[in-house]
Image 1 (cartoon, rainbow, N blue to C red):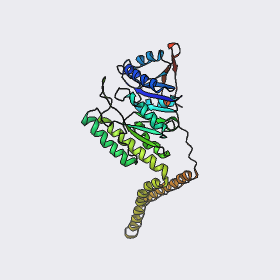
Image 2 (tube, rainbow, N blue to C red; image 1 turned 30 degrees about the horizontal axis):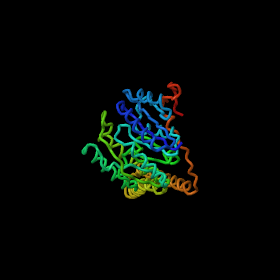
Image 3 (cartoon, rainbow, N blue to C red; image 1 turned 90 degrees about the horizontal axis):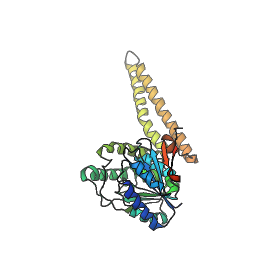
Image 4 (cartoon, helix red, strand yellow; image 1 turned 135 degrees about the horizontal axis):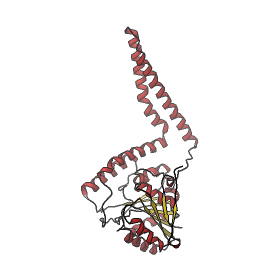
Length: 327
């Protein structure tokens, strides 16, 4: 299969049908073997029932339902794991991304790029609550990760399947995919896309998500830095402990020489911090050795093992229930 379009949905009952029609019309023009995967992230409205009804009449549409709301990133990861296409396109389900832009992404992938990111250059969102925080976040993400993407928050992206299926996604990490994948050195392109104002429902994003972005950004920076130079990061952690150890041991010696009672608690604390610092350094040396010798094979754990899903089958319009429990 050539192309899979993955769309997370959460309380988008009014958007599902027009979104499906728009995606289908675009895929017909492409003329390639394709599929659509709708992932209902535990919606409380009729989102799943509408999508399931559409899937009953279209074998190219696959529908996944989470039993509860897990968030956009797990929903996107579930769709990516189930995707069968050699190219995977992700997009929002609120009709703000335009499916008509998909051919432009496919052209870039065919040019040899591994990841193509959409840039909402004329964004139709509120200035204070959406645009300004987004610009600050994009600038900060670019500075911290070294991957200068203008619009990390745009869900309209295209990936080579063999690349994106190896990227671990959790929390709110979908916006950091280019930064996470940069460890493997993929070719990344960014193109302008259209952006429409929301037609139905309410936005699920707001200023409350800023702290999550900052925490995830710290995680990404640590992962990227640790992967390339683990000894450096362990050494940075060890330095404060070693400084405390030296100061406490010297202090205990001074107190012992010039005082009346030896400072055993201070000496004990110095030995503790010294042992901690040395242990961190030895761990850094071990990590550096593993990194240099190439023993870095990591098996990506399937995120679907953490949730229960219901897959709407296209066969005879019946529903096949699949229960997947944590390993």
